[in-house]
Amino acid sequence: MGGNTFGTLFRISTYGESHGSALGVTIDGCPAGIPLSEYLVQKELDRRRPGAHPVHGEDVKLNPAVTARKEADEVEILSGIFEGVTTGTAISMIVRNTNQQSADYGDIAKKFRPGHADYPFLEKYGIRDYRGGGRSSGRETIGRVAAGAVAKAFLESKGIRILAWTSEAVGIKCANFDEGQIEKNPMRACDADAAEAMQARVIELKAAGDSGGGIITCRVTGDIPVGLGEPVFDKLDAELAHGILSIGAIKGIEFGAGFEAAGKTGSENNDPMRANPDGGKPRFLSNNAGGILGGLSTGADILFRAAVKPVSSIAKEQLTVDVNGKDCVISTHGRHDVCLCPRIVPVVESMTALVLADLWLRNIADRA
Ligand SMILES: Cc1cc2nc3c(=O)[nH]c(=O)nc-3n(C[C@H](O)[C@H](O)[C@H](O)COP(=O)(O)O)c2cc1C
Image (cartoon, rainbow, N blue to C red; front, side, top):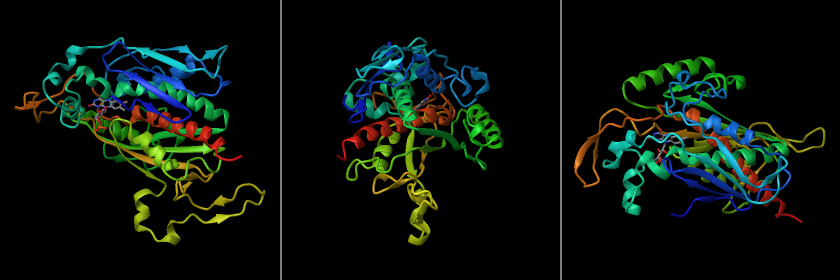
């Protein structure tokens, strides 16, 4: 299987299956001198962990949206740091699987879950690790989040901040933006009232053996240099789309005004510019471009939204076929989220950080 590596200069290779012995990542090309600790990586992994409330370490009972599976997801950094900083050598990180309950997944060994990767995986490889979905499990994102923590630390040292949140879930939209709310409610929503309504809906869906999707919004702020991105095949928006759409269950991405731009006139959609009275970078009076023009960052906030599909493994009975090609029904039990948005928020931040760290390093090579 190819395609386990992402990035050009800040390059990650991830490995591991849901119910194998471990998952992890090796980062090649991380600059020396970035303060890094297991605590910093663990903090990000804890935000992604099943059974975790967004507030570090709280109990799953508070979060109806996510699976009751409890895993420590404890990271060990094997190489690449010394005396609390990166050394410039390859950084390898490992998370051992400690809570595999393969028996929970008995039915999916013989039947294909509609909406999951089971069928094309078996057709393609002729062999499939059905325990928890193997490499197509959401646990695959552990390596991305561990590496993303390092990329975030690098970007923070450059004054760049990445924030993602749930802006819509299970059919309920946030009406207000309150940044302080995001890590306080189990949906990672930016609106406390909407978060309450989402949780109530999640409980209904769970009782009905069903699931729901949503939308994650991401905003990059701070000292974003003008010109991140390579203007032909590796445009900033193309690279972000690659990173974000490579996350399981993400089905769409739009930048700035996104698909709404198609219905606007040029004069409505263009972001007017004014000189900066302090002599710095010009200002944009709006941000329909989402901070990207010609595949290059403009220095304005980078803004995008990603669509998350409903979780495919549901208890409700559905029509499918078995591995012998016979019609059957499937009802997936075991430990599955009802809505993935709160768990994918940190994965979106991580992939964004990995893309930006890579393009930041590539940008250095672009001009003498
Ligand atoms: C963090 C995370 C957790 C996930 N948890 C589940 C889950 O519990 N059950 C499930 O059916 N899919 C889950 N998924 C989604 C599947 O991995 C994904 O739907 C599957 O690989 C098929 O790929 P596709 O939906 O992108 O086509 C999760 C994804 C992520 C990123």
